[in-house]
Image (cartoon, each protein chain N blue to C red):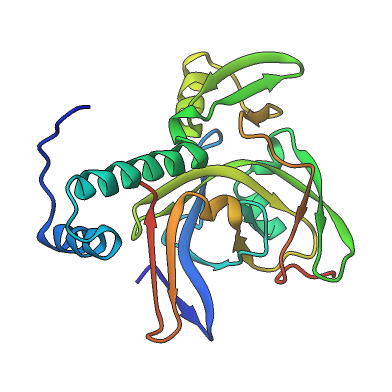
Length: 131
Length: 110
């Protein structure tokens, strides 16, 4: 199963790729990413994952992220690929990080490309690419 | 007006006929009217969401455009072909990244 509820939080199994540097995280298999429709970006990842993909070796773009408490943080980002083999998804988008990020989150810019159904009654999540 | 011969799944046809009956009863031309509206709505939605092929990724070295492609794999291939070291390149998408965005409830202060 590539997308499911983990303690009622929707998650999806993904890998990240930096095609320009030939790097992938994790090298084998996939990691869990939280689906958060309150995050307006594509993917927010921990700094160690960002560096593991050698994304810090590309010229970074910086922008301001507004946290839930209203405070702001500067994020650093560039473009990378998100892959879910189980969902047959390969999407390119802006991947960003800042020092406090501890888990991978995918947001609205990712969700724009998919049909997402969250069924809390049956505990089932369906994700498919837009036609 | 054009005349199309199309094939629908039984389930789709059943849903279509049910909704046409609910909206228009059995009046003449109602099936075509609903299909016309549905197709227009679907196309508008696709156009609003943006076709993936319409995205262009560009690689810059300083202010100089080094290469461009419709996806990152294509861009990586083009850079390899030209023998360009990707380190230090600035990658830009035609889908502009907003300068300010909400981080959602999962992102916390350290």
